Image (cartoon, rainbow, N blue to C red; front, side):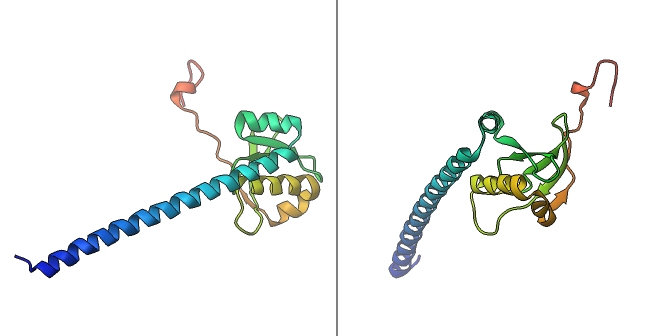
Length: 151
């Protein structure tokens, strides 16, 4: 068998690890609560800058449309912090994706507000620093194919 000091040390170490795990969990929960508060404040600020039409769009789909100040093109800004800006055509379908975000650690609401202001006040400069990416349209499946036609 093991000598008593080894068993005692093992039990002590186990309690110490359990206590450390509880402290780490408490810190994680506190950090999540702080992040939730920051996100709520960011969304509140964003909503203050949205037009009534944009607010309705945001309430319905967590996205809203803006019109670029230089070209008049329409963009849809979706909830998120990157790859969330899509140029859309007249039918509202995505044509091209744009990724540009402010430097630093910001919430989704803060990033979306910065993107809105950039497109509405200095579209060309915003797109000059943006990364462009093709938008993936959802693929059609057999279930949504027109009758008599298979893909």
